[in-house]
Figure (cartoon, rainbow, N blue to C red):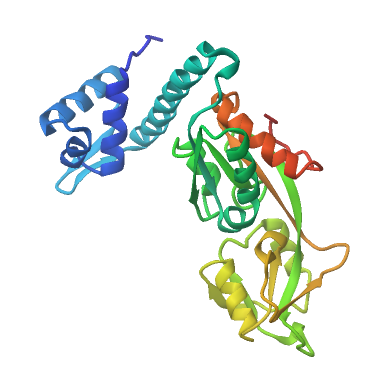
Length: 304
C-alpha cells in the first residue's frame, strides 16, 4: 500500500469543512479563500482515492469515507498538540508539569456528581491542565462516540449497556451503581403510580429485569432527562426506577426504596483512545477518578 502524506493544514481543512458543512464557512473559519479550501479538498481526495464530500446547493456533506477521515483528522491533530506539550514538559525536566487542554465528555449525572471531585483534585495537583466538560446524551454513540470521533479526549460512559465501547477505544469501569425505586415520600402504595422514564435510562439488562417485574407498568410519562424525572416524581406525577448517580442530592419530597438483592445495576467507567491513554493529562484524570473509586470492578475492555 502506498503511503499517503497529509499535512496538518490539510487535516484542519478537512475537519473544518466537515464541521461547518461547506467550503465557504470553512474558509471563514480558517481565514482562507473558498477556492483554496476547495483545492485542498480535491487534493486530499486525489491522494486518498475517495470522495470525501458530496457537493450540493446546500453545501458539502461528508460521505461515509469523509466522516471517517474527519474523525481520524481530529485525533491526529489532537496528538500533534499532545506531542508539543509533552515534549516541552520533558525538556523542562522535573519541573515539567502536565499542561494544556483536556476535553471530557460525560453524561448528565456523571458531569454533575462524578466528575466535580475528581476535577477539583486534578486542578489542585496539576493547575496547568485546562479541563473542559461537554455534557452528551448517552444515546446511540454517546460519550464514547465523542471520543472515537476525536471531539473528546476521555469520556465518562455507561459500559456494556446502551452505549457499547467502540472497538478502537480502551477504558475501565469506575463504579457499579444500583437502581432504586424513587417515589413521592409518604405515598401509601408507590408501586401503583404510573411510571416516569427518560430515554437514556435504557440498558438492556435493566429492561430485561423490568420485563420480569409484573408490578412495573409501561412508561406513561416521558421526560427529557433524569433531572426532569426527579422533578415530575417529586410533584407526585409518578414513580421511577433510577440509578444511584441520578439520585444524588434527591429532594426531600422524594423517597428512595431499595429493590432487593436482584436489583439491576449499571456500570460507569471511562473510555479514551489508545494513543491518548498514554498522555499525561488523561493519565492524571484517570488517577484521580480511580482514587475516588478504588473498588472498581474490571470491565470487559482493555484497561489503561
